[in-house]
Image 1: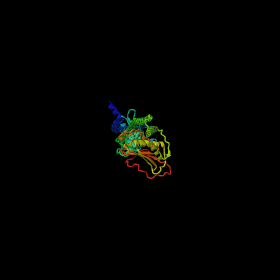
Image 2 (image 1 turned 90 degrees about the vertical axis):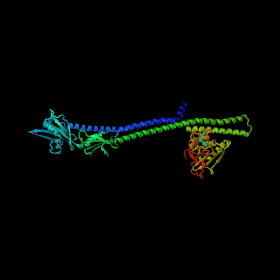
Image 3 (image 1 turned 120 degrees about the vertical axis):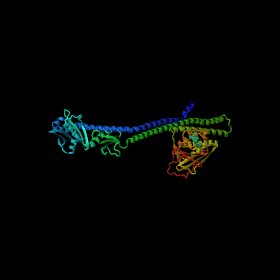
Image 4 (image 1 turned 135 degrees about the vertical axis):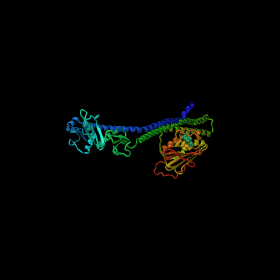
Length: 565
Ligand code: ADP
């Protein structure tokens, strides 16, 4: 049970990631399947939509012609029987219909064994009926009316006296209606010759424009509606296009029945359209999944950092307690010796006194670091910058640590520049503390080595303070991390050295506050060199010093931290 618990705890982040990725992949898989399914059904659905649209279009066209023809051709049988053409003229004038090119009536009569049929055309300008004998219209009207007129001559009662369409001659398309008397006999016909131009240029465009947005609210502009004649020539299209004339369609049902009304999407066939929808939708799914995954990885990384940080904080507390306890114990022991008066030798007394002083300084240094760190963390750390010469500051710092360094057998070489340094704008206290931290580390991580060099140089517009030791060195992979708060290298020789993990993070903060940086060069087992780069004061007369020393010395690697020069 405990094993499972600890497994869950240590692998919580990975488990979290798996817990997100698995359902995400499952979701993507399902999405893929349903989109693929949709891809195969979309063309069918779209074709059905297109067919439905064409059906409605046909219905509206048919209705338009049928209703108007019914109205215009609905002549009173009495008027025809009485030969009252004025009533007929008045009727035609009242219901004139732009879909018709000409209106006419047909009559049949018998006299003395002969039967004859007469056709009269309505002249809207002169408001009268006229014969126009022998003209192509006259011949066409005769042919169209013939069946009904034959019935009129034989007094036949037709089964269904309806509108009939006669399109035998494509140039003379007729709609004809029998005129029936009160005994249901045919006594004549009323007819119209249709106007192709009106259909193709007025009625159809208007009907298409009105119904397209209703059926295709999102992509009405994508739909091409076309009419082709019996020779497959395009005689109407609602917009310019290339390629196939239609994807789906059929002949017009009522009139113009030899013409084919078709439709298609402008840029894609239905299959292409479905493919595109699939690709777009699936890409969006993949994209959102990646964004989601990115967000989750980011959150998990933050969580992992927080976990690491809290572990480091816990270690920090234990480390600091130890750091405090050790010097306090020595101070107490030496203090007791002195109090008991057992030490009579003055040189010993001084030695103990110096030891107590050095240990107290170390304690102060540690507490300063902790206080500084807390100020940095809460954003309350302030600096008092003044132009200063760095050399005396570094020298004084070395003096402060002299006793402790000597007590531990360290030999410190101070390597000053050949010529005086230009002033730098610095916070003396902060910079002193940074140098102390570097020296403190050099001592702590020197291993068996006992040699430390402090070098002061100018390089261009930077003053470089290097603290070089011949100690345990640092692995390259750790270069970045050692400047992080609480971070301590936990492997190798440094493992047993106590520390707070704050020293270098404060050094870095101080360097950056001075618009400088801190760099490290190190080789494992051969020592480390930490260098503070502090900009010289911006005074126009400042001259660059002679070429700088090569700080890298025998150490092979260099690594930069901070804001950069
Ligand atoms: P600490 O209190 O642990 O010394 P620092 O922030 O000063 O904290 O240093 C962080 C880590 O960097 C140390 O734990 C140590 O591993 C490494 N380090 C710092 N200075 C040196 C040095 N001069 N030589 C080798 N390792 C060093």
